[in-house]
Image (tube, rainbow, N blue to C red):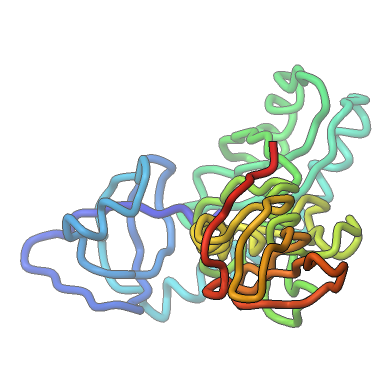
Length: 261
């Protein structure tokens, strides 16, 4: 799930960006990657980080053990599916994560209603001989776990640089004049694309500099009414007094004499 954490080190151990390490977190032993030093600036960008300790650099033995654990996950996933079906639980399994230390398996699932999985946990713990943790997720988290590429041709944002997925609304798509076809502005999760959020603040700031649609303005060539805005180019489509439609620069507006009610 690409969890970010602030982890201490032992003694004089030093690590650099990109180091693969074994760490102990509140979930158990995990494999992780060093990102940067936990400076005040870095900490200000993280909300509710996990904590723990970096134990050592990842060794060849650790890599082999990690690969062995991951190779068992498909079989463990099928076991989970079978038990869910046998118990008739109304839930959809998404993925399982077998932690590096082997002491815990995290089961990620989707469900519309509250699920009583006590019997499921008991059965799985007996069959898989480890602790079971159930974690309900949403459809955006499902994409974060399973999706690969977006229709832009690049790896999905939620599984690369995003650690928290920003709220996105249809208002953002409308302001940026994106197509409102749901099939074209929806990501792999079926929800609005996260990238609609990236430039929204810039669009909103630039729009503040423009007269609103419907306003009457005065230009060097006379009065006109604003019909549409081209936010990025800072241009306006206006209707002139002689009923012509022309595109002008926002700088050509001398004054706004009547705003739209």
